[in-house]
Image: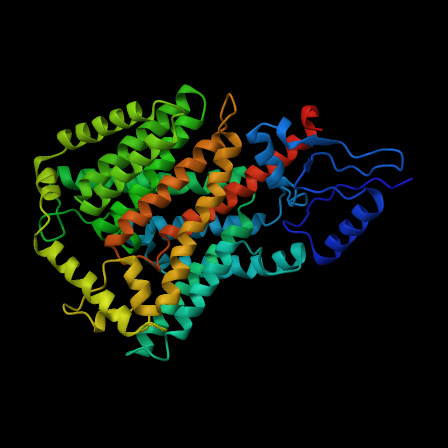
Length: 484
């Protein structure tokens, strides 16, 4: 008689090579071949000689059931476990330091100015041996990780041909930190509590930044040329356009959490957060941020309702117009201005960066070296041409692929749950992350942010969310008798 399997505290996210060979031999010995084109295996328990494995015809499955089955066929070894607890703690603290920067708010904490780098180094020192011990390899390899590493390689190759190699090398080191922590996040965030904790941390910081932006505008603290507010803290949020980029990517996440979670208290909290983020976005006076917000609202109005999308679209448009009408008159005036000095300079840099990209198509001019080719000694103000001009056209294609690939993951989650009577929170969060990626893709057309943290957190969220959805679907397949 076959021995019973023992449950381990940890099973690898992806089976090792020896496990795959063992599984394939076991499948050959214990069950006859089944063609996936005709039937979908739902229960794969070992069959005796006089038994046949139970199957369910594809035509008898609903679309959501079939989608879950298709996703779970190849991920039987994905499990939720307590592995990487210390690594996650380090990642959480690192995220807090990167986003909140407490040493800028409180002068007495100036000694923490390099704390993010120290925490990242400690986290990496814990992560590498833990990951090798658990999975015998340094990282899982979803397509986004491969694309991120390829993008990092193109940055390295651009250094020798840069006009100022030292500048390119310094930028590469900063980008290297981003990619390393992205890889850590992909491997470490593997439970719902961890993903929710990380999102809630960033959402909390976003609300604090929004409150500060609203307060600065109301008190006339216009530190940027006397016309616009500056961010409460430096780093990612010192520029109001960069702050607007972050806030507009968090709005769809907050809105979909409001829709997906139950309980009046939860809904009230996330509704207030959403309104704060919108108000903070208005306080930045960012035209790119407003354009991204319009695209997000249109996307959500199309995705969320099952029917009557035109009506929902009309309601969403009315809400946007009402928000603009309630905004300060100076904000409406700025939105109506498209030929001021800032807009003209950005248009000029866009044309110039396209020309530089065409003249240096192989490896570009080096990371952070475009400024040396600019007519006005400025950055490209466009993430796409930033990559193309500084790292080459191949890097541009890799970068676009990195942005687009998560949509496939999130759409699979969406389709697997769209027909359910009570849609789970994972369904709404999948749509919210799609909206966040749409917002980033729109607003980053007006900002040089390709090497910064914004999108790498969003893509990591998408990978982790699909892992959770697949494991949940796999668990349902094992416990629901109607699917066996």
